[in-house]
Image (tube, rainbow, N blue to C red; front, side, top):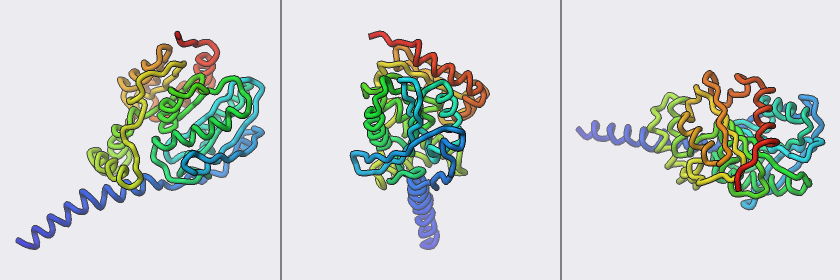
Length: 286
């Protein structure tokens, strides 16, 4: 009987503490994107920059000059980096239309320092990059984010007057909702484990799981949301609600696209046409 009780206690410890604690730690320290690609790899001139956040993290970025007065800041998702092929293709397409582009690595990713929080403190990374971007003298700044970067773009951009418009490709609705979905779709663990993992993330790194577009009341600027019908991390209702937070928000959906696959399904030309139309033609009511 004593052995059985001990075995039960050990199993509880393993399944309710050791496994979720280990997953939480590894999630906060993902393997860094090691791509050696640069804008030069896709034929673009660029310069490098480094900025420091208010909490002391060094953020590494690229500036691709252009002829237009609207600057695009392009932001990667969780476990990705600024050298992601998808982002470089977008930068090349935007730059071919005359737009300057800034790209950077969030904390805990690529060449930047620090540890990821999967969104909450990444707002500080964007804030520091916006300080740098504002010093370049462009008239308007547009945020384009993928997944985690999309969530950060909406949360930070909604209250920053330096941002004139926001493009969010496959944003998560909230961190407390996406963690279980990510666990359920990307690991052999049950989705419910995500709630424990989120709790341990809060304990390990002070991660605020009540973060995301779900907690933004209103976005008083053009907001374009891209949604893939096969995305396991975001529902159509959530994507619709996010787009509806702006009085001039728009949802573009591709029923056969998965997470951050919308550009592949629409075609990059049409994808950027949608972005360019929002920037040039859409005005929000006062």
